Length: 293
Image (cartoon, rainbow, N blue to C red):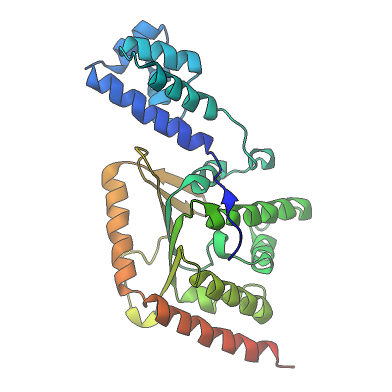
């Protein structure tokens, strides 16, 4: 097993945690956003953005809000001000100017990640060669420059360190069988990728399942999504990705619906041991294909 790496402090998660705490205190005191904004001498939208984590509150904002809400516990005030400071810290991925920086931020802090993918291997489980093959065709016809592809591959490899983070997060990945059949980068690349899936499947914090073709139709056939669960008071997030962009779903009914669907997918997928057997079988096919003249 790889040595554990230190936990990454996620600025986005700190802002979200702080926002939940601030909103809870406001509601406990029966105040509206407008009433708080009036006392803060700011716009209601600023208060709303601080409560949703979209805008990082400053330590001074937190101090003033604690005064409004009558919080006199100095240790708790200092803790909340600390969250405000952490919400503005720099992270290793920020210099890469990623379109999906918010997702990386949340991923690095998640206690549990639940994946459902229909056509490609999830990024956290990809090999370098598989990732290279994916980025060579990404965003055609304009594509990425070789330099940018190298940067994105570096980010992907760095992201994978989360699987050996201390404390270990849980990853449950449900893949459609099509993922094993789609030849990304050629038979040799696929053989290496399936070997990587096998290695991941025996990690203590990773569960891998495949939905076989014979299962037929199911409620998530035209979707790919990730459910991110966090510790403490921070609510779960569903990340839905598509060709034209991505969505972050946070409302409880939406998150609950995706969790119900994911539980169903786990129920109809092959159990982990049978999944390993299928991956081994497919790897042997690529072995034969790569040895042909």
